Image (cartoon, rainbow, N blue to C red; front, side, top):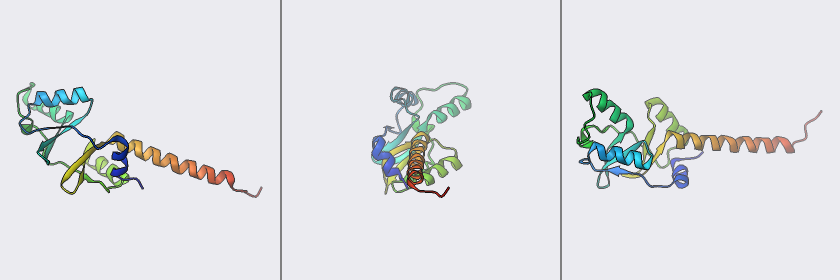
Length: 147
C-alpha cells in the first residue's frame, strides 16, 4: 500500500509558504505564479495555517470587496488537518473526502515536509489499481483453464 512518502518521492518534497504578516495580495500572487491552490502560513518551521483559493473567496463574499492589504493571518484557515508521512493513500483519500479538503500538509513529527493535493492522491490510487489489474491479467494469461 502506497503512502504519502511514495507520493512525495514522486512529486518532490517542496512546498510554498508565506509568513503570517504577508499581504493577501502576495499570497494570491504566489498561488497564481506557481499555479497552486494553497500556500502554507509558516512562522519559521512552525505551521500556523493554510491560505487557499477558498479562503480568498470567503473573504471576498464576507467583506463584499477585495482587501489586498489584509495580512494573511486575518483570513487563513487555522484549523489545519494534516497527515503523517506513513499515512496510506487510502487513509488520506478518506480524510480529504470526509472533510471536503483538496490539499493537506504532510508532517514528519512537527515538521512540514510537503503538501499533497487530491489530484496527487487520485493519481497514486489510479496507478496502484492499474498495477494490480496488470498483475491479475498476467496471472490469468499464463493459467491453463479447463475447457
